[in-house]
Image (cartoon, rainbow, N blue to C red; front, side, top):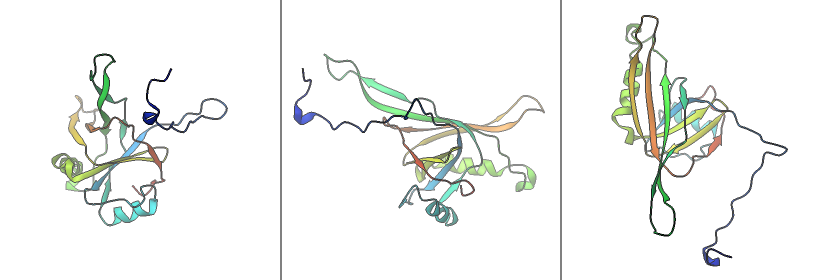
Length: 186
């Protein structure tokens, strides 16, 4: 028994499989990229374009990070009486910690990260966001995001000072990875 009119039937997505058994992909977000809001990629997968844009000052990358992207949150709403709630919105979040310190500028006080993160925090709408993984995938570009970040000082002289934050963006769809080798570039 059909549940929709033939005019409403979608094309099926292309199927996938891992060949002979399950093939997994390794994880690990290594760096973020912040891109000027007036920059537009010709080819997000072209490492040469990334190099040119970084050299021109259109893209800046972070230091190495400890970051994760858990399952997103979804907003559901009942939109008809005879069906379950439907997904009507979604938010993705990337949680991160930045343990880097700048020992060169500011008399070794490590203040360059404060300027960097405060600059992003002050005007996130002026940046496009992307992230890069340990296995050479770039995700993005994300045109609209929010960031929250603050420094954490642990409670002993043997502890560390680091930046703890999260970046969130609205999307129901998953952000697909793009294969690009930015090692040594970003």
